[in-house]
Length: 407
Ligand SMILES: [Zn+2]
Ligand SMILES: [Zn+2]
Image (tube, rainbow, N blue to C red; front, side, top):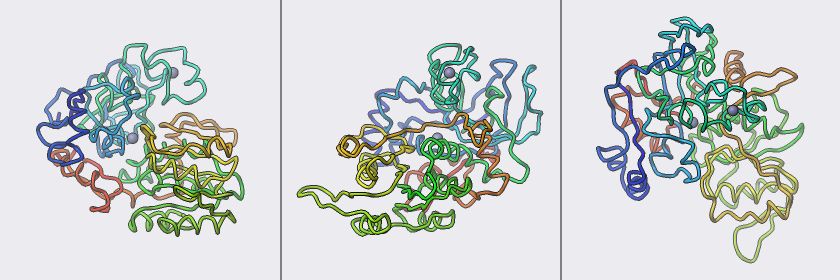
């Protein structure tokens, strides 16, 4: 089968970091870390594995971050290479292991790429998995599989391939009414919902979503789909993102720069304070800021506009945050939270996986993420696909996906 293999080595990593910013040619060319290769079919590693023929597989911000050398060094031990890249996927079951009982060939399935104790075969579950946060499993360095999620794991090739094989526990059936073109967004929706539920708006609260890329847009849709009675303000950089944010249920898109801060102060009855040096800060502000960008600048902004005692939720993949002023965290007793991947959520007494929740909301038509899938390419044109994902403002791309079945 055809697959896109990623070899991240320290020299290549540093190479990407320095040269990748200058030109895509280095990043996506022969000297870069990616190659489209002919490979053997991924094996069913245990009788509980299922092999899936990939229909659609998304390019995640973390894939792009990895190629650009923007991942944090501290995360390096948690991802293992070489690996076939790709962790957002929908497909059709092609073959099931002897003890895999949940699916039959022909079933349409969506993937949750995060391996917990149950999936790794490291029973009994660690305390983190027992809490329902299997994406941050503490036994990643035990058992037969290398650390890392599917697609950034040297033992579990990812989904930028014609087939992938995973434990059946990582798969969920896609409701019939949900097209592949929407279901392929289930992983970003999972990340957004997990972050949302860990910092859920309380009735009457005003929240700010910073960044209206895939995660930010999924978050806005999630807040509306789950009917949180909150006022949703959005900080978006580009007009095409603002348009989608409004369509998905944002109450107001803030203007950029100082005007945005003034408007935010007006809405929340906050006071704009101007330090003698540096950017302005609010007294008062929003109850929750969801940072869906994950840069020092977005974290800095979040901390400046959250009220005393408010919450900042980091959903975007953040690296070193040098330059962010953390004084408000201390001085205004802000709670800083993070959310990675998905797990098990509890909603009105019902416990279900974040993936099942995401697919349920899609199936119930509580949201429509189909407009987020802006570009699709066959596997053979992955370089073009990545270029469009890398330069999303120029191409007005939100989610770019590969269609391995098309060659
Ligand atoms: Zn991802
Ligand atoms: Zn675990």
